[in-house]
Structures are given as structure tokens and as C-alpha cells.
Image (cartoon, rainbow over all chains, first blue to last red; front, side, top):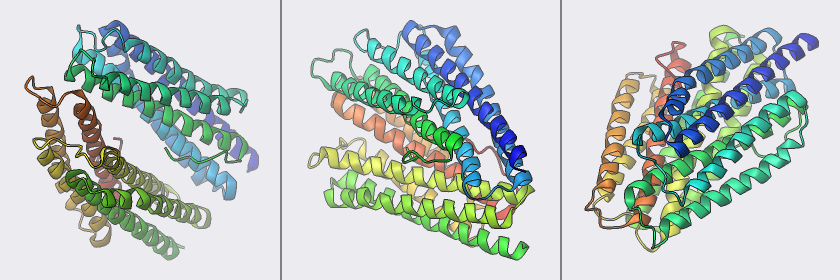
Length: 218
Length: 218
């Protein structure tokens, strides 16, 4: 039974790794759609989210099959439940990338971002995409040192997010309320994407090692 | 085994019902803290969130014990996994109530809300609290008709949320960018609270009946 369990768990982990790639691509395209007011890229992300949702369903079905057929207990059971939570985190990351793409489409052909805040989003996008890719790599390479790098990147995301608010709140902000509202929501989407990635990274460490590295709630 | 399973499932459902009460109280207090700039209420919500987190851990432990001891399959297995997801939804509702309370504390003793948007938040708070209470009642009374009422209330929440944005975006908005940023985030917290409540309501129907009433993702 142990071998069948390990094989099925590896299959489940592989699906999570594929999902990480899907939502990394989604955020990369969504960020470019936002920065370049590229409607076609935005549409790609919007229509592509269904695939992430399907892959999440597949992951959950696999996890349920594993529970039903192997009836794991103790740490093995917690690992499978962690994988179910992890699939939920990744699906939510896809939703957040979708929200970014929807914002780009909603304002098209107007750019959503005034030029002085665009670099913040370029960097937040870069960090978010990198977090998702690192999580996917951790599953494949079992190089768990990535988890520490992910925490550091998340801190950088939080700093950018905080600084973005100081730009918006500055008395000299010349763009009025409308763009500020858009930017507030967009900043939140990137920050939440990173939060879920970090929670996911911790779950992956547990899925790979059976050892919990820290708090999982975001 | 069927009786032991049902008894343990009832125990797990009871914990979810208790959690619903906790996060309904949290949003009720957080909304009053916001509307009345009541620092003490805000602090109560902030310190009280740890109890919600603990109760969620208890729920997840109970679900894991149920899986390990009863090894449910087929629909029974899906029901237990739904309860695990449901506990996650409720914990997140608690986090969102916490964010509302933190906003009230951050601006204290200044009120966060200009008078013309306060009624929106009074109503969004009332709906959110009612959604959480209805979910808790559904578990206790098994009166699943509440689920339909919850969908209707969620539509009302979405309408309020959309209308709130038209108020912010109106050219005559006199309060500038700072309050608009706060209100944007707060509106998002209430809307997400309701989204999780509706997903939870659907899961509860499934936990109680074994029949899935509609899509679960929010």
C-alpha cells in the first residue's frame, strides 16, 4: 500500500506543479495586459481561468481517490489534506490573476495605471510570477530552500504594496479618485496572490517532507 | 460504523455552526466599531479572531480524526472534505471581519466613513451578519430553504457594493483619495465575506443532505 500511496501522492503533487505553471503564466500575461493595455492578452487570461478551475477539480478528485483507496492515517492523511488546501490556494491565485486581467479589459483602451505607479505593478507582477514558479519548482526538484526565498519575496511584495498606498495618499496625487480606486483593488489582488503563494510554499514543504515549516493560514 | 460516522459528522457540523456564530458576532461588532468609531469594540474583534482560528483547527482535527477512524468513501468522504473547506470559508470570514475592525482602529478617533456612505456599510454589515447566522441555523435546524434566501441576500450585497463604487467615482465626491481608498478596501471585505458565506451555505446543504446544490467556488 505504501508504494501505491506514494505513487498517487506524486501524481497529485505533479498536478499541483502544473497548476503553479498555469497561474504563473496567468499573472505574467495579466500584468503585461495591465501595463501595455493589451486586450488580447487580457482575454487570454480571462478565458484561460476555466482550465485552472478544471485542473483544481482534477487535483481534488485525485486526492479523494487517494483517501478512498489508501485510507491514509496520521501524517500521510495530513499531507493529502494539505494538497487539497494547496490546490485551493493555487485556484485562488488564478482568480486573482483573472481579476487583474478583467481590470485591464474594463478600462481598455485607456491604460489603468498612471505612469508613476506602473513600475510598482511591473515589480509586484514579477514577484508574484516568481513565487508561483518557485512553488512549482519546489514540487519538481524537492529543493525546499526555495521556501525561504519565497518568504523574503513576500516581504518585498508587502513593502511595495505599502509604498503604493503612500503614493496614492500623497496630497500631490494628481489623478483623482477613479484611478486610485482601481489601483487600490489591483494592489490588493497582487498582495493576496503572494499570500496564497507563500501559504502554498509552506504546504508544499509539508507535502514533500511531512514536516510543517510554519503557520499555514493567510 | 455508520452510526459512529454520523455522530462524528454531527459533532463536526456543530463546530461549524459555532464558528458561524463567532464570525457573525465579529462582523456585527466590527461594523459597529466602524460606524461609531468604537475602539473598544474594534479591539474585541481583533483579539477575538484567535478563537475563530482555534475553532477552525478543532474542526479540521475532528475531520481528520473522522477520516482516519471511519475511512469514509464516496459521498460520505466528499461530505467530510466539504466540511474541511467550509471551516476554511468561515475562518476567512473571521479574517475579513478582523480587517474591518483593524480599519476602524487605524483611523481612530477619526471616523473612517464619510456620512453619505455610512448607510451602505450599515446595510452591508447587516446582510453579512445575517448570512453567517443563516448558515449557522441551517446546520442546527436542517431548514435548507435558507440557502435560497442566502443567494438573494448575496445579490443585494453585490448591488450595494456596485452602487458604493458609483458614489466614490462621482465627480462631486468631496472627500478626496484617502477615504476613497479605505472605502474601496472595506467594500471588498464585506463583499468577500458574503461570497464565502454563500459558498459555505452550499457546502452546508451538501453536508446535511449529501446533494450538491450548485457551484462551490467563490
